[in-house]
Image (cartoon, rainbow, N blue to C red):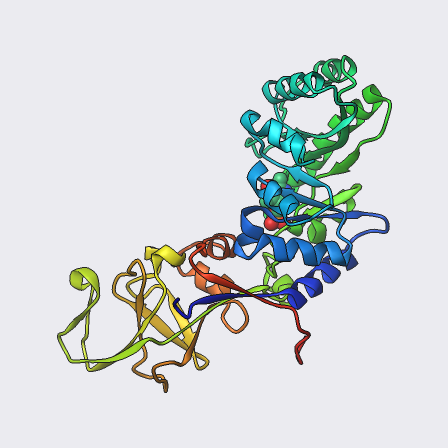
Length: 371
Ligand SMILES: *Cc1c(COP(=O)(O)O)cnc(C)c1O
């Protein structure tokens, strides 16, 4: 086993959860998005902690992610955002709640629910209000309502939509239009159904930027993991996942020698390099190579030199007081994922979800002095 580890701080998670909750209007429920291994961390540990904290709902992208949570004993309702028809049987078997995003999936789900003699199985109807990714778009709600009225097998637990640019205030007009469109869908559907499904449209940045659009529930992902899409919000939140490793070996490189595959780095002066036990197979994109990315060693930035290898990277430590075995931070507490991902024009969402399953997860759930 290499010494590369992703530390998951559940106290930071609790802090972020409580902070985001404090931004909600009275009575608004909180759905925690735990797709993609809880944004690259560890979905079971994260979901268990959030359940303990009183979260109202979970969402995952695919059925398999929800099944994993159920098998670990999670009992809170789980919305599956992007189910495939092939997974409907196992969705029902594991009490997961599918998003209905098209007539094709709605018809298929009703057919299966009726075949199994289900009554009032909870589903969620998704409207596309501008993202053009998933959801009913430009439809006559009467057509959806027709299917719902002709069956007792399913019941609409919620109506929802997703915002395109809630973090970008230059897109405020577009966002406000999305909110209006969602309200209009919701009004027509609620009238036609004769009962009131919950409404939800806000992701993390919308919780902060559009408090009037919190409706009955909000869906937070990135904020729970410690990132708020602005420097101000980042200050309020604490990174949950910290990727760390150690220095495996230190080399002295003479002028003119090269480092790494394809001789991508040539020492212009005498250099000292450190080899670290993580590479692109662990989630460090090749794009971070050739000086674009860096790691933190003893509080200083050590640039990645040459090409990122599958299992290793080499960093320049010429000006850093360090030795073999010293701790190295890649992102998280003490090493900003925002700043690092920006070096390759990426975002924390991509950097933190990229940590591969080879990297050991270490759960930390003890209150620390700072937190
Ligand atoms: C991923 C996702 C979210 C969470 O968004 P954040 O910006 O991480 O808070 C919310 N809703 C849907 C539909 C999503 O796919």
